[in-house]
Length: 203
Image (cartoon, rainbow, N blue to C red; front, side, top):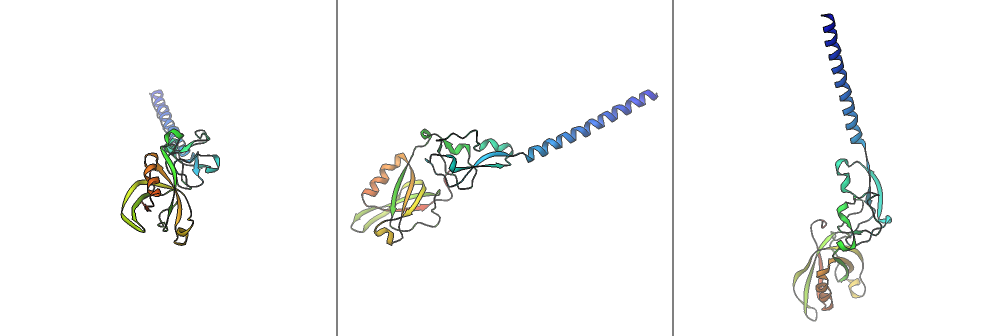
């Protein structure tokens, strides 16, 4: 009888210790997973589609990402000469989906000169619609219409000539290749161009 009670006590003690050890190991694993970091790249400046990446565009940073760590660009995944396929703001983590090769980018950069200032929301990396008013006479223009939706601003500089005195600017736009001809034709015809910001950045 005494031996039976002893075995029962030993078994209970063993089970109790096993539960305690299991709980401790589980807690350790949870803390370790929570505290672990992943080295991923952050954009050092605004990156626009078509831009060829080099190490100066990126800053390697340790961040806590958990299961989403594979969604962002790591040092091992970066290939010099990779091309930006989606806009990434300065200071943002660089998604793997925003980087590819030249064959993945069906866009072209075109510079347009505007005779009027840009809206405050129109900044490098932002998305804009290109509106054109057809020139129908000397200083006379028809009603405006959208000729490109969702172009992205890659660079902004001061305009030259008369446009400069009116606060105009020169804007380098990233536009779909199938829209380049329409934009160049509009510029050649002397149409009045305007850039209207869309909500947020294009994805």
